[in-house]
Length: 408
Ligand SMILES: *Cc1c(COP(=O)(O)O)cnc(C)c1O
Image (tube, rainbow, N blue to C red):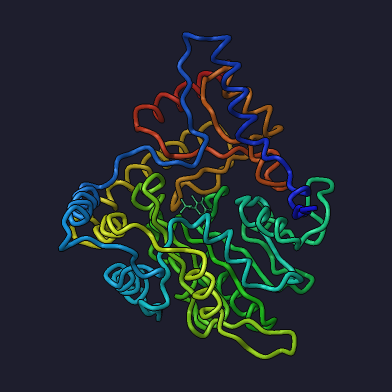
């Protein structure tokens, strides 16, 4: 008799986006003539940069001729891409990362989800609250938690991000081994300073813990003082692994390209306390279970690092940041406290009432879809997330409608 992995039975069905879709469908059925503006999901809406599209086409053309055809590539990615990532995303910012520490992949979601495999089953895991659910669910699947009770899994340490701590969690009061951090944050849009990040790096060094740093929204940082990478912090190489993605950076959500940075001296320990390179473990996992990102996609990704690509990618992100500024200022003017929206595409808004109640109000009275914060964890109760991924026209229209709705 084949037995299942019973840890899967502990998983909570993600009602969040299904519930949103159901409420939106009901509204549209009742009001077929009213247009709904979606500022809910975290998916980009604008086309790939021209430079990426051209390189993508060229990559496909090379596949069409025997002499330039490519079969399996290196599992870790082509050197042409790894080198540009190391130089432009890290070395140019004073972060000491080499090309062979960069692992190209088909997504930061997969990498964030897969990385936990290289750690012991009894590792104590700390996750943010509110949280990007991938960090939690993949550890549930691996059996690192107990049951789900009162909105939380037993065995996980929840790092609370609240108004009181400025949406940067305090260090855990009980020892943890594996720490998930995400900055600029999804869903709160909060950013972390170098000093705050240094506190976490020091904690990890003192406790022989590891930080998994998700920097999927790094490209939205415009404030010079905010760190783009955890490797800008002294001592991080031994205790951190970083995740980046071209999804939100350059519109690759449907094209798929991301990367993980695992420094060679990033260290974990066996049961006897002997040190081991996590880079080696990740390399083994990656090359055993993954066969590389397609060549044309890596060519398209490489184009982000050309002069034209950089200019176009920056303009793309600027467009969303202009939306974020509009949303933040409109909601602030209406008397709501807002986090994010300055170096992030997300605005986290204290609705001063239940998340779902505010969601329903915005949907029914303004025809605007947001995401109820309660769907991201206990600390999200009372908040909503509005995303900047839409057109200027739709954002202007949505903010006007919200203003009218709340004036009633
Ligand atoms: C969108 C997002 C990612 C990126 O996922 P991809 O699989 O690269 O598209 C990773 N982490 C967070 C927090 C995200 O919001």
